[in-house]
Image 1 (tube, helix red, strand yellow):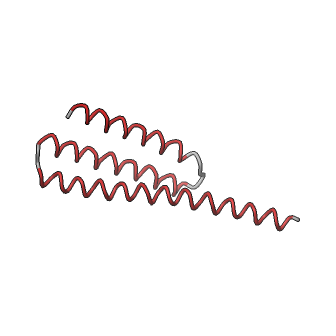
Image 2: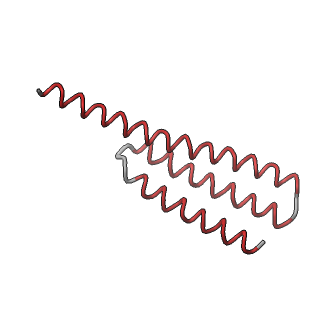
Image 3: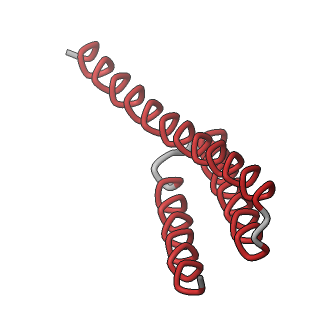
Amino acid sequence: LMNAVRAVTAALARLLDDVKGASRLTDDPLVKQALFDAARAVGAALAALLEAVKYGDAASFGAAANSMRSALGEMGGAAERLANKDANEEMSEAEGLKLEK
């Protein structure tokens, strides 16, 4: 169990580092906030999941697993917003270059 906790904790640390790096890719405060909110949700869900495992509480584990699923969906949505924002900015820049010609 302790090895699993260490591995999950390390994965969460990598996720937070990735979120910090990804947040530097945009100037949009709403996209940045969505990334950080999603990372916090994943962290909270992970803590609840580990707590349920620690105490062997099946009902809590089910609820925590649902929270984790939701938090990961939130993270995916935030990443998608970042990707869409980046793609829209690139298209705008390309359109601007066409207009200048």
